[in-house]
Amino acid sequence: MKSVAVFLALAFTASFSIGCSQSTDSSEPEGDVAEDLTKGGGIVFSKSGDSALQISIKVADGLKPSTKNERFVRLTVARGGKSFGMWCAGEGSIGAAGEVQKISCGDGVATVSNDDDESFAITFEKKDGAYEMRVDYTGDGTFYGDDMRIVQPGWAWQGGAPPPLEHIGLDPKKGEGSSSDPFAMVADLGSRLSGLLGKDIKNSETRPLPAQSLSFSLSNTMEVETTFNLSRTGAVSGYAKAASVLKTPGDLSSGLASASTIVSRVLAQVE
Image (cartoon, rainbow, N blue to C red; front, side):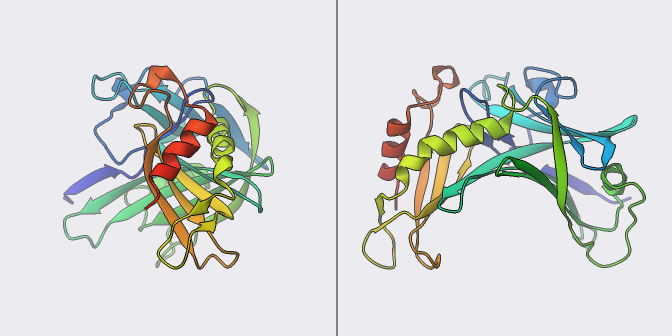
């Protein structure tokens, strides 16, 4: 029998009024979040041309003393009477090319010998109002084959590394823009970070240069890490360490800080 260690690859949290989270802490079981993640709420999608596939992504708060100031996002994918779930993470980018919001979900299995390791990741992207899904799978189907067949009926491993399923169009059915829609929060936070565009950012290559665009990721403790593109070619970049996006750092109930406060905190963390 294979001895395996199952890890949660990503955890994300967001809300329209407060924030997002990312975590690699696999100790947060479903029983420690504030609601049943498989029922109601969040944003719900169907796959374009395949209405039998139902996808829900929703936010829930931590309940344990150690997670009461954190938020989590859970993906549930269902077809008929079968379903599976994953924890997710959020990120975004803003600049001249427009705005993008992403929700990345993943799971994986590491075997003792590492020769049967598997990973299963689903990424959702919103750009220009349209939603797409990408599915990446590494393995022979031993651990996640059944889940893959929920996404794509009839899927079977053909040997080698399975190619990703890309540019899968999604149709939002309900919950878009609601308080439990993580895309809405990523967009809201991105708009608050937009004040960083044009700011001179220190870097290791040359003098401080104005930010042309930026990408960001968020932790489950409501902190944002920011990477700046400082040249048109992308050859020069800058980086800001984690900065809290809450009015009172560490206090989820305090709400999201103002745009000016977040911009000041991020600039103070530029390396």
